[in-house]
Image 1 (cartoon, helix red, strand yellow):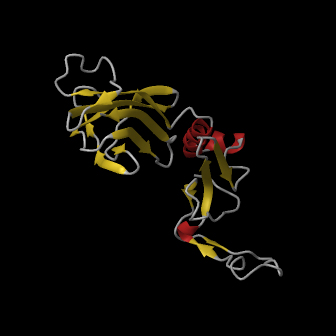
Image 2: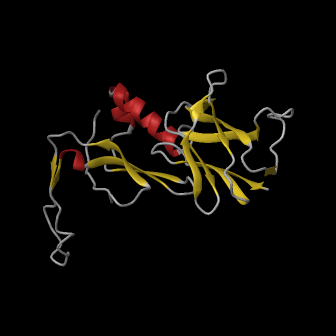
Image 3: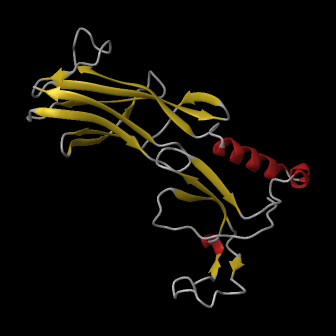
Length: 216
């Protein structure tokens, strides 16, 4: 790729920013005109290698997105006309920023008592102590403007009262691509519980699916 510009450093404690394009291992950056009024921490302006971020992404908790690039030429007409790599990168970057790619959505949570005659038709409001429950959620991912079944190996389900009673990895449904499930027994505790699928992964919109049920 062609890149001509400046690099940046990211706040490692901010979970909403992340590198999209890092500098090469041999890169080096230094502030040639340091601020005489800068604090000791702000004076640390010498960075190298993959500490340098050339293009970074920001995604808020509500899935608003922004891209910050240190180059005004990387996606210019002149560069795109001469660099296939820049064409691919800039088009994918624009798709991501405009939420044409990396967008997760749920097709809905389903849950029912295992063996129930109405399995999968209606989510009951109540469960009894120690009933066996089947939970599932179907997810889709938008890439290049097209929706497709979402494939992942790190989705978790939590069954929460004041704290999680279960925190377990969801299993893939091999018959229904993009659908994940888990079977469990209701705990011996009366009260209001929540099914929660909370998934936060850089490059994709955040997913927070919840449904409330009572244990009677």
